[in-house]
Length: 267
Image (tube, rainbow, N blue to C red; front, side, top):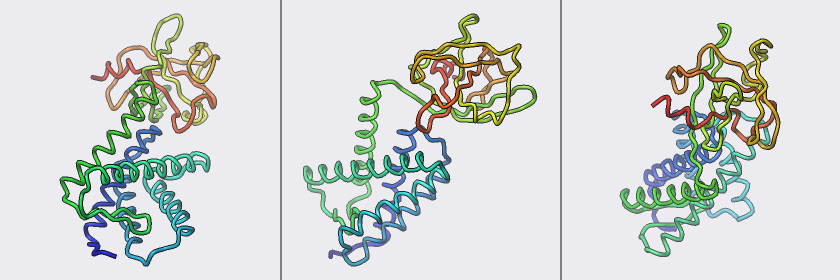
């Protein structure tokens, strides 16, 4: 075993884990704080010290990798239903393996000195500049793969604040170019959200509108109502907007969808 510098090992893996967490966050449209991501990255740095142990058998490396990935996901994104938590962990592991594959390709192609693998932990005793360049290359390759697999549609995560009847509801929504849902009579944009986000709130029947949709996993209808006030990323939207409530229509970590055009109103 060649010399391993603990400070280099720790710092490098914090940096890499943060990039992988960021990729997972963007891939699954998860809302989380920078502090949680940083804390999870620090845990990843501590976990990388496994490289200092004697060589472990392959049969132990796999469960250790899975447990460490699950812990990182928990620290980064918090509690989640089992199915959703497994999905997040699987995506993180897939990105980790993809990252290692890309790094190994770049290593074999350009032969940078100082790269080793101990107990499935990648160690780079290379210049910080080269490390940053290689990591950013991997990051943008993964971003490009995501864009290509999503047919080029752009999306962002927005913080939405809805006020109705003196009640205020906060949730995150995915702004999607494929969502152009409007209320059929007024033409007002519709933010579609799962019913569970409104904590038992039932809108007045006199204000409720039936809104047909064709792009939320099939054809159907949602019941929409006009809120008293809407803020997107802290900015009040003056245009009239409807909130369409659905039940288990949206998939994965996405619990609300906002028409991408609404983002232009906040600029």
